Image (cartoon, rainbow, N blue to C red):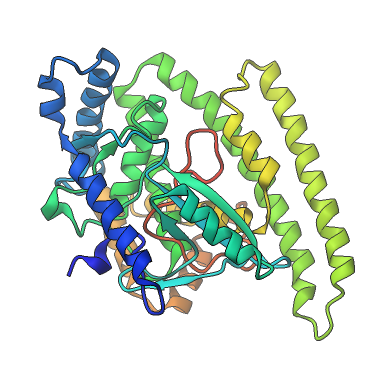
Amino acid sequence: MGLPLLAGCAGTGQSLAYYWQSVRGHLQLMGAAEPIADWLDRPGTSAALRERLELARQARSFASTELGLPDNASYRRYADLGRRAAVWNVVAAGPYSLTLHTWCFPVTGCIGYRGYYDEADARAEAARLAAQGLETSVYGVPAYSTLGYLNWAGGDPLLNTFIAWPEGDFVRLLFHELAHQVVYVQGDTRFNESFATAVERLGVERWLSERSTNRARADFAASEARRAAFRTLTRDTRTRLASIYASNRAPAPDHAAQAAMKNIAMQQFRDAYAALRARWLAEGATAAQLGGLDHWVATANNASFGAQAAYDDGVPAFTALFEREGRDWPRFYAAVRALAAQPPAEREAALRALQPAAAPAPATNPPPTTPTPKAHAAPETPIARHPD
């Protein structure tokens, strides 16, 4: 019974080995989690971890009392996995497309990634897809959501993979993951991730203004300014690549011309990032803070651009809906549930109607899916969202 509920569970046509690694990996993660109170009572718990667990308690309470997010078992336990990521996700796309290759699973529907608890297994899957002519990306995922299905078994735990993040990034991840337990539409990644990203941004803004310190607010503002500039750069690049790839639908596409234009677009992207990076360093950012972005840019391809699009493109529409509902969280969630109940075409049309005129339109060929495990990245990386 539990198999379809576990993150990354295999669906039709998937191997028994994939089922087994999913079950084993998730059970090991759940088994490593202990209640926050037990960690705080333990003499060997470090002062830094104690501070973060107390922060987690406060943020978890804030999420339910102030943001209307579920008050359940999730994020009331902590696990040290002894590794840098909870899982590793594989994404893939064609050489002239931003549409992600998909896998289909029982609960989440057809999604644009496949998750592994062992990095070597993820890279082996990426190599298999690359041999078929696809562009691939493998990235570590600090946290993922079980969508509330396993709250009876203790819920999703806090993990060492993100516990030490800067305060603003730490609490926003909790808000994002809990948002998936409010509304989740099977097979509609852009809707799910854009909604959760809107909740996290609105929620962290309120948290920082009401509960945080001037230093934490300043640090988050600087980091968020860099993220916003990077989002603009990658969105513009996605739009340009989508335009180049649009001719791929012609009866006889000129792949040589497309490849040349793609190479120019990617080089211009890297050059523009180098200019941004130099400016950020001059403004006081450190090389360590920019390491995640540096790696993303160095390895960027259609797969990584396709995965990123799901998290950002619909956020302005959900933010506009929040304002329309008077910034009232229960009314906002009710409106989102009403959208989620609509057929896909009507739901997409309603989101387009909500999109502010000044905001960029959704990227052409958005990835069709992405849910659990989530693609969250560490702070200062473009797939926050995570990583998910």
